[in-house]
Length: 135
Image (cartoon, rainbow, N blue to C red; front, side):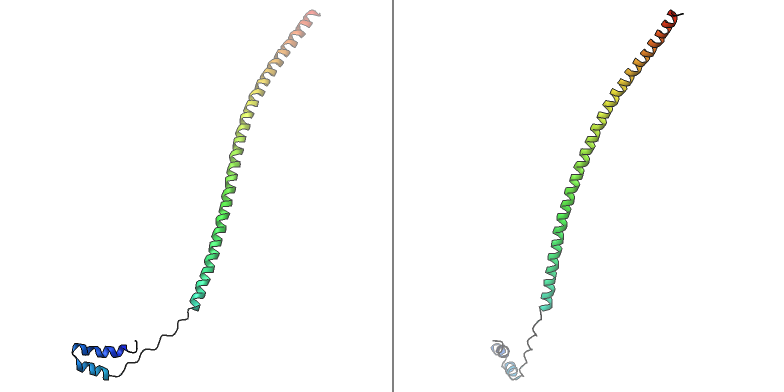
C-alpha cells in the first residue's frame, strides 16, 4: 500500500479533470522513500530506569527504617516523660511528708523545751528550798 501511494497521488488529479497534470505526475521521477529510521537503542534508558528504581527502593527502605526509628524514639520519649511525671509526683509526696515530719519535730522540740524549762525551774526551787531548810 505504501508503494502504491505515490502512484495514487499522481492519478488523483485525473478525477478532477486535470489530465495534463496527472500525466506529468506519472512521468515525473519517482521520489525516493526515506530510509527507515535507525533502531533506537533503549538500553541506556532502561539501565538508568532500573538504577532509579533501585535508588527509589533504597530510599523507601531508608524512609521506613527512619520511620521505625522515630517511632522508637517517640516511645522512649513517652517513657521518659512518664518517668519524669512519676518522679515529680513522688517528690511532691516526699515534700508533703517532710512538711508533716517537720511540724511533728517542731511540736516535739517545743514540748521538750517546755519540759526542760519546767525541770530547771523545779530544780532551782528545790535547791532554794533545801538551802532554806538547811542553815
